[in-house]
Amino acid sequence: MAKPIKETPFLKGKDAVKFNQDIKNNRGAKVSTEVRARMKSNYEKLKSIATF
Image (cartoon, rainbow, N blue to C red; front, top):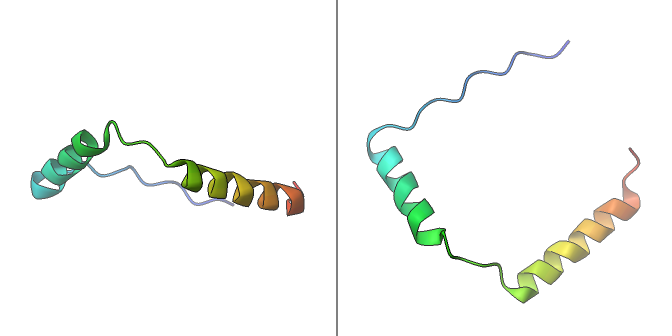
């Protein structure tokens, strides 16, 4: 039987401020073409061996 999932805690104080700054700084960031190609290659490898 599965264990119940606990509620996600709220961010407070410095953690909340840092999280909001990180979100603001990375809002327009794009993944490079090389990274995207590597991710797709890894996905294809996993897809080829997966048996669901």
